[in-house]
Amino acid sequence: QKEVEQDPGPLSVPEGAIVSLNCTYSNSAFQYFMWYRQYSRKGPELLMYTYSSGNKEDGRFTAQVDKSSKYISLFIRDSQPSDSATYLCAMRVSGGYQKVTFGIGTKLQVIP
Amino acid sequence: NAGVTQTPKFRVLKTGQSMTLLCAQDMNHEYMYWYRQDPGMGLRLIHYSVGEGTTAKGEVPDGYNVSRLKKQNFLLGLESAAPSQTSVYFCASSVQGVSTNEKLFFGSGTQLSVL
Image (cartoon, rainbow over all chains, first blue to last red; front, side, top):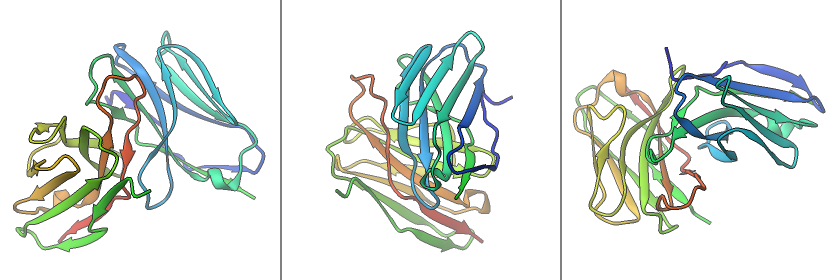
């Protein structure tokens, strides 16, 4: 069983829809949670970063962490065609700076 | 705004050949990393470096070697390429791990095919 599970999709939504992307994990020691966005033929770029449980909002993006359920989510409001990309969840334990565990990524397509 | 630059962008090798991938960063970052990305497997850490002259093994180090002779450069070597090393390789860098801002800066990747 992988430490981090993520549905690869693809997920297709119409422009303006609310998108929900999710990851589950098995390692209860994970403390830091991240979402990276990766456009085709490009490297990932950090989108959201949260520590422990709770919500974090940045513009149209909201990251949620539920440590009791070992479940993290990324919500995209008013989705745009420019949001079409692969979204990778990532997480690490406290102190394990070098070891970031990534999900396989969910491919999102926003249809105009 | 160069950030992290990887060369080459594409390469085709025959089994048994050797090659070196070059990563250069201009952000004065202490930490540098080499990842590989395969379908259904996600990003996996090959080797990393916490400073000039230091290297360490990551999750999948077998068949690879690295060197960090200069702070801004991190080289990944394949001594005898195998088809299992066909992958997209990403270099990344980050500031020294004092802050909780866990931002990895990635290059654009190298698509490597081993025939």
